[in-house]
Every structure is written in C-alpha cells, then in structure tokens.
Amino acid sequence: MRKTASSEKAASAERAAPAKKAGSTRKAAPAKKVASVKKAASTKKAASKTSAAAGKAAPAGKAAKGASKSAAVRKAPAAKKVVVAPKKATARLKGTAPAKAVVHPPGDESPTALVRRARRINRELAEVFPYAHPELDFANPFQLVVATVLSAQTTDLRVNQTTPSLFAKYPTPEDLAAANPEEVEEILRPCGFFRAKTKSVIGLSKALVEDFGGEVPGRLEDLVKLPGVGRKTAFVVLGNAFGRPGITVDTHFQRLVRRWQWTGETDPDKIEAAVGALFPKSDWTDLSHHVIWHGRRICHARKPACGACPIAPLCPAYGEGETDPEKAKKLLKYEKGGFPGQRLNPPQAYLDAGGKPAPPLGAG
Image (cartoon, rainbow, N blue to C red):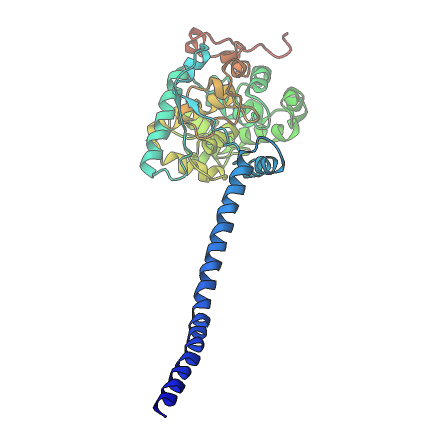
C-alpha cells in the first residue's frame, strides 16, 4: 500500500513537470520576439545607410543624378552686387583703382550726423566750384528781377541771349512799363511762353514805378507782391543784388537735396525751411550756387555722372548714374565738359578758372 502511494505521487510529479516547462516557454516567447524585432530593425537601418553611402559614392546612375539635381535646387541665389563709391572721385578720373568706401543709406542718420554730412558736401562743392555765381547776366537789381522771371521754363543761356535786346530798348522800369506789349512779345519769343512773360515783366515794371518809385525793393515781403515774382525769384534778387542771404529752390536744388537725403519734402517752401535749418544763414546764397552748379554740370536728372562726382563718398544715391570714370567724364556739361557756360558776360573769376562765355543769340 505504501509503495503504491509513493508510485502515484512520483507519477503525479512527472506529469506536472512538462506543464510547468511549457508555461515557462510560453512566458519567455514575447521577450525573444521583441529582441528579434529590434535586431531586424537594426539590420534594416544598417542596410539603409549602406545603400545611401553606395548611392552617394556611385560615379553615375540615378542616385548621383538625383543628388546633383537636388543640390542645384538648394543652391542659394547669387548675392546682389553692392555699388560702392570711391574715397576720392578725382582718383577715378585719373584711371587708377582707388580703395573703396561703402556708402550706407543714412536712413537712420541722426540730426547731428546729417548736419555734418550736409556741411561737408557744401565745403567739397565750394572747392570744386570756387567761382560759382548766378548764371543770369545783369547789371542792376531791375535787370536781375526781369531776367529771373524770364528764366522760368527755359535755360539761363536762352535768357542771357535774349535780354541784351530787351534792356537795350527798355533800360528802366519806366521804359518797360510804357512798352507796347506786342513789341516786347517779339523780343521775348525765343524764351518761350512769351505772352505770359511779357505780361509779367510789364506788370512788375508798372508796380515798381507805382509802388516803389521805380526801384526794386530789398525786402522779401515787398518782392513777392510783384507780378511773376515768387519766393525763389525773390531770394535770387535778395542774395545776388542786395547781398541778403536766401536759398534758391529751383528744380536742380530740389532734385539734389532729395537725392542726398537732406530732406524728403517736395514742396519748395518746406524744402527751403528744412535745408535752411542745416546751415548758418550766411551760407545760404553760396550754398544755392554750389548745389545748382553741381546739378547742371555733374549730377544730372536722367543720368548723373557718378564716376566723375567729387562728393561720391558722401552721396547715398551713388550708383544711380554712370560709375565708369571715362564714360562719366563724357556726361559732364559746361566748363567741366569743355563747353561754354551760360553767361555772355561772366565774372572774371570764372574766366580765370578756364570758363568760356556763352555765344550771343544766333551765333554759330
């Protein structure tokens, strides 16, 4: 009996052992499966790297072609060429290659820096045009005010070629006030808008006779009351006939001060106020001459001669015109280009500097 019980107990133990072993095997299976998946993923990743390296190293084929095409697409655009001004434009005129000085637009320029730059430009222009003067021929304030009125919408040269006949026949305000309008129109015809200009010069002559005793007044508030006389004309007369400072805001002056970023104003009166604040009053008349002369000779409206400009390093608009020195020299006008100036009877200082008087009307 004991032996039988012992045998049954041993048999029961033997039957339980395989079941336990099977359970253990089933429990370990997931871990083995995860390890297998990780190993497969690692193998796949390594194979991918090997394939990429092989594709990159291939001298020809689709992979190399695709890589080249992709690189071309990702290629950054060429940097825009920055136009810089020379340190001294005079060096460029001699055909040398001077060191470059990058000109930054003074958009964030402080008021103090603007004043300094503006005054330096005026000093530089004073060295270039030491003989700058009003380019209208006149012998007295009356001739100057009439000539300035006639200069609207035409050149000073054309006015200078026309006024000798006018002043020879009507030398005083009294003479012009009593003139026959048709005869005056015939004289002024070369100036353009001759009917309107005839009305203005006869009208201002009558006003001078009736209100000022035949004398041109020396005050701004009186001058602007004359027919055809605005602030620009008044300042020309005050500065050049009476020695009283004034800023002449003509088309050249307006263009250049905006190009130099002295002001962004477009109204002549506001330009006058903005620019006047940058300079002492004593500089105003000469400043006007310097700017206007530079505008007529070098800094033209359509094609500035940037390569021949003496203030190029100070100009934020450098590069708007021709920068090649030799090509720029061909754009220079008047005495800078070897041509006659605008006056038939210019000051001696201008002649001493090599300037040439303009020819009379009909000559050449």
